[in-house]
Image (cartoon, rainbow, N blue to C red; front, side, top):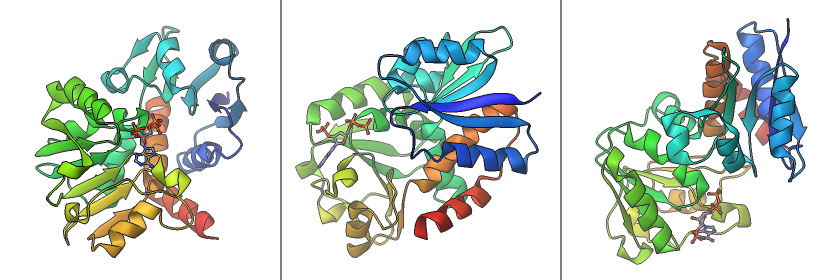
Amino acid sequence: MTDLYAVMGNPINHSKSPQIHSEFAEQTSQDIVYSAMQVPLDGFESAVKNFFTKSGKGLNITVPFKEQAFKVADKLTIRAQTAQAVNTLILQEDGTILGDNTDGAGLVGDLIKNHKVPLKGQRILVIGAGGAVRGILQPFLSEQPDSITVVNRTFEKAQILAKSFNEFGSISACEFDELNQPFDVIINGTSASLSGQLPPIPQCVIDENTVVYDMMYGKELTPFLRWSQENGAAKVLDGLGMLVGQAAVSFELWRNEQPDSQAVLLNMRKQLKS
Ligand code: ATR
């Protein structure tokens, strides 16, 4: 029998998840249907209950419902607990719903597997301290970097994050004007690129060995990646691989089959450019 999956969000019409998961299903010969569901802003919980009552097997959750999904889940993985947000719901055999967050694993996998960028022992700068950054810190720290420095426009938010994650590894907060040396890996987790802006970051954080990743992506390089390239970064990478990567981790959780995310990523990249 065909198993039902969906992504819930509002708005949802630009979601690439149905295409990604349909390609994964085709690759691995899984009999599934994956649809996009626009959910009213005040109707998330009932939409989730309804979906699972009508024999749905799993959901992806996107903006603005990830924090509500965290509350709806019966159980949570450690990475979902630390993210305080859920992007994947999984119907368990006993009928309960497990909440997970695959965003950080998607990003870590994109860096390590797709781009051969090691994280162990590296000095990492994370820019931003919102929900997107909270979602990736535990998976990053579990790769045992030398250190993670969190810098944010609102310094207090960076301090709070650093404090709440320091049980998982070496993490500290700093202000933009305290940055005075290069990092091995820089992650832009701010939403500045959405409005065509750059975080106020000094050039000295980049040298010829620095890999720069923006969690956003688009047809062109994001303003932050363009700036990094102009300032001599070794590599600049956008968040399309993270999008496909988080989907691949969700798919594996649901179906116990590992899809070929590289092939799907290549297709998505071609479409984005055309
Ligand atoms: P998300 O869920 O995408 O992380 P968020 O929780 O609203 O969204 O967080 C947005 C992040 O981008 C914050 O770290 C924000 O900085 P503040 O905490 O100071 O608001 C950061 N941000 C957004 N626009 C920015 C800009 N133009 N320059 C620097 N940081 C910016």
